[in-house]
Amino acid sequence: MILLLVALKIFVNKEEFSKLKIETFVKNIKTQYLYVLIILGVVVFHLVEVNVIDSNVTKLVGHDYADTVHIFENNIVYWFSQHWTPFLVYFFVTMYIAVYPFVLWFAPLYYLLFNKKESMKKLAYGLLLVYIITLPFYLFIPVTNVYTYYNIESPLENVIPSVEQFFYSTTTYNNCLPSLHTAVIILVTWSTYYTKNKKLLYFTMFCMVTVITSVLYLAIHWITDVITGVTIATGVILLLKKTMKG
Image 1 (tube, rainbow, N blue to C red):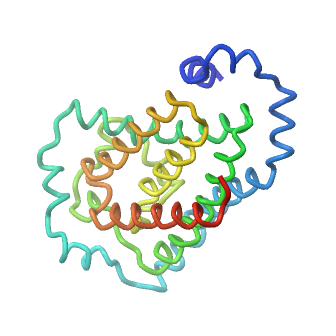
Image 2: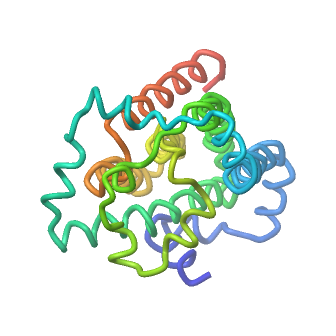
């Protein structure tokens, strides 16, 4: 609650903040319930996929495609792990573990609080399409993350001990191709553009750049993961621009 109030204070001007009412928020949820259900549905299904479906399908596939990705990329991402500096590791882990999740829940909440229907609509349908496209990759083309593949000590654990116990309840070691972090942060940034809130837009743009950088610098994703994440997000955005008004 404190974090929400601080964020509202930073990103919302006084005039807009003064119009904030619980009744309006409830009304916006009712009028935009479809978008809320889509986002919640994707989140719930993703958790089921990670904790129930993925391990069983991985056993059936019986192959890790990280070896194939490594043939093309060689040791490019691994190189970053050999040049980690404490400050940058702490910074990028913070962006990856703390700031990114904050942006994910704050953006749609902001859209609902201040009736940014167009942004909510674009985020909901964009997220649904991205997940539909990425799901077959996660199920049938498992790719182990970089630091696990090279048996490097986890940078996440070094900064926040025991964090992986929580982190890997929302993802898996081999759900890397494509990078969902990359695709989703691009979607959030794009949807934020339609709020006309420059402070929030600049913040999400900063997060987009740093989160994408973090997945490479921290040796979490392969370059191929990031490229496919960018490609999918860009394709979905272009599709929605053609099919949606506004």
